[in-house]
Image: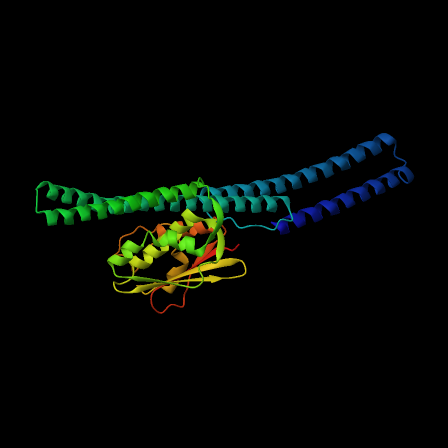
Length: 339
């Protein structure tokens, strides 16, 4: 494209110079040597101008035709959703091609993201449907057994099972609601100054019962008086999600180590468990919405917990990372803005 434009410019400039020279020479010859009258000179001049005008029109027509052909080819590529190569922006047509290429690339990425989001929501609905069917079926079964007026000891067992399945349903619904609220940006954080002790007290209260069921000991080390800026309720929920994963994926009779720390701009909270761990190549993906690790298929869950945790922390100026150096289990480190 650039080659043809340069040729056209060179021809136009050379032709213009030649035209001016011819006009000057014609005038000199007509006046000094040929003694031709003015009418003949005017006719000659008009003829030269006409010839030059026709030549310029032909050149312009050829150049315009080439431009329209190029634009037509570009539109064909766009219609077929093929990649359009960006051009040098020295000429107007190249600039148009470049802009169109960028627009098509942006449109394609938007479309791909929309398709991906649609598939994720379809998978989410499928997972929620699957996850809720089991608790609902169990609740119905245990309720029927209770209606048969069994022994008191067995009734208590079934009631406990009903409560457990109901808690699963409650967690699924709350997780889905929280995800929707976070993504729509309607959550209003109440960010204040809190100590690590206040944060841990709010978080550990929600997980002690599940830890006791598996006889998992939760050990807290470090200074709990470090103070940070965050919303206590939502940040505690973010930590609960991490702790729930540690409890879920750890064997019975194991432990979870929690340790506090401080940096120039952050206070830190690490959660180390000795469970199934996370494959190193999966660490960049674990915070994705609906992502579940390859070694978690036999465990309940739909891949929302860590996604919610990351969203809650980053929206308050914090963040979370997983260590890649753990030979056993996993270690998450949470960073919160320091006061």
